[in-house]
Length: 308
Image (cartoon, rainbow, N blue to C red):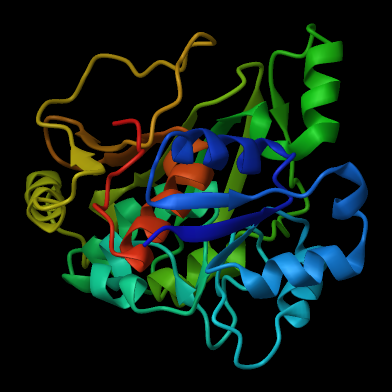
């Protein structure tokens, strides 16, 4: 039976990319509201309650309002791509590689992970679970992203000012992704998060530097690589690089991708390491992750519609 999907906020970048991944799929029918209906609370409420799935691609407050519009007892299952419910009780974190595919498959409310936390958690969470890294180390996260993750305002600014080559932000260290990073990894201390934007539409590199010589509880780089390889052995989306490349590139011409690649770099003596995740901030970092969760919830092939 065909299942219905309403993408609330479908005119935004994340919503449009979700729709692209669902195009031509016979398992689903999209519920589409025209411009006037999108502004009509009654029309939105009806779409939210009458659909099998609602995918929220909205600002945080609007996402909370949308959830409140769904009647108690409604059959609608929700995937929220905003930050609103990522650390909220009663919501399943939509990272099946970390929480389990069956957990996501059976969920009524799924919160899509953030793009930066996706890279960070893919690197850190399995190693902490396997006690190869300590929970109480003061970790830092250095990351760069394409500007599409910043919404319409940032997209407009970057495209109108081609002279911007690099933009560091969240310099007051209060980025909204930090609670998610800390909670989902189980860290004692919030990581020091250093994000930046570059003049590419999509793409992301997330790095966690490890001064292993100063870390009493840290495993060797080869042990961490082996553990990550074993952890993601059955994942069709997350891959662990076999060899360390000489360089990592984000190209302005990069095509959409729902793949995430993990790297473990180290010096010859094994005294320092750099854990690095490479992903598309609009793919596994947003739209691809939502579709992956949707596939599991709807009983479809996990990778259907994904670009791997």
